[in-house]
Length: 260
Image (cartoon, rainbow, N blue to C red; front, side, top):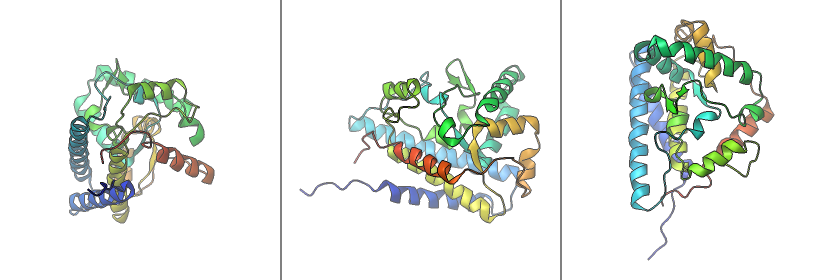
């Protein structure tokens, strides 16, 4: 019997790029507006959630461990990069679903974390461990609209996640993540960004707390972005930072054994 060929995850990333691109083109065909982006993100998130649910079931059938479960939040203490369209979905969710009693705490935690990470280099913030502003009592307050980076983060070992948290500067201690969900999520998001750029929107990806601090400062900032402006004051990464970020992302997902 011939040996089963393992999938090329780089090719899979390209496939999901096309999926994200097509979705964005479809949902913005009538023009760029808040409702179109919100519908797009709802479908994109539903798509990746369904994909990862199927992936988890396959892991179970093949006896591969998946340790991600409610109440485990080691991954919620590391850097999260998000894009403008994801921030728009979060802003709307906070407005529609999150009580005022919780919002004040979220705003304070966001501003406090941004005050620390805002001046960091990529080499620094990628290894800085501090709770996400939306984490409360071990639960995510925006779970339904959490960014793609959070949705596609699937670990085979909670212990490895804790080791990474406890030893953030040790590159040998990385969470053992499955590669397929990571590449699928990134591919979809990159496809969306590409399609939005063709529509005249400037896609930016940066730290979640930096984006949200700007939104809390000016609730109309995303409307300015939808109008084709670049209102977020995000600095340009140096060449060294870009290389480090790409290397760091590529090193994720190399330890866990994906289904063949």
